[in-house]
Length: 164
Picture 1 (cartoon, rainbow, N blue to C red):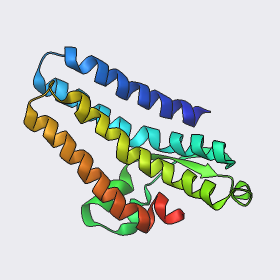
Picture 2 (cartoon, rainbow, N blue to C red; picture 1 turned 135 degrees about the vertical axis):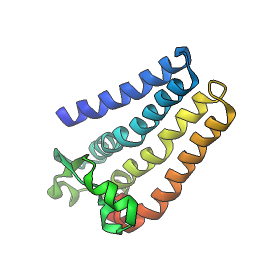
Picture 3 (cartoon, rainbow, N blue to C red; picture 1 turned 135 degrees about the horizontal axis):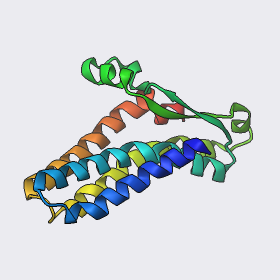
């Protein structure tokens, strides 16, 4: 439950920053609020989405751990080095529960985190549009597109989609 509470708190922080940002004086500070929100929406819904979809499909989980991203397996020079030192919440699956779940249920459980991490960050540039200079809003959109591109490359090789 503690892991889920952390995930929910991160999402609440993201939404709070989105709500507060338009009232913040200073374009740079507003942009920083949006960037922090973007990062929160990239990371925090990921495991919570696995948990929710998994529970709906019959997958059980034992606990959360703090670990390293599986991005390190790709051995990409800068990305793997950064991913190797940043702590990350990870959800441990009760492997026995996987045997009783359909192939579709397992696929939905594994894919859900990647899908959430690809889609939810787009909320930030949509909300920020008109509240930031156009170039900065476009930058957030390009960052979101780069995130999707990277995840579509990475996930089938070493991430959630590779587990399907």
